[in-house]
Length: 65
Image 1 (tube, one colour):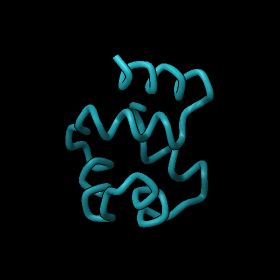
Image 2 (cartoon, helix red, strand yellow):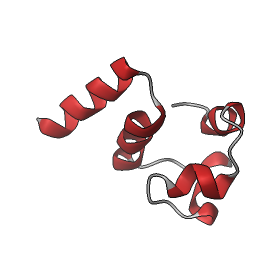
Image 3 (cartoon, helix red, strand yellow):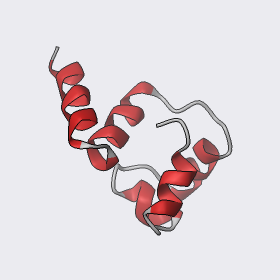
């Protein structure tokens, strides 16, 4: 999930819609899109919410270990 802003734009979601799905505020998501490091738990949630089925399965497996 290197370029989250492009993913959000491809999905045609505004920041509030996109980030609230994983429990992140719009302002927090804006900071991540501007280049702030995204914490590992948030990356896992992004993979589960917006990733391919394979990426989602890998993320879930990491959580289960």
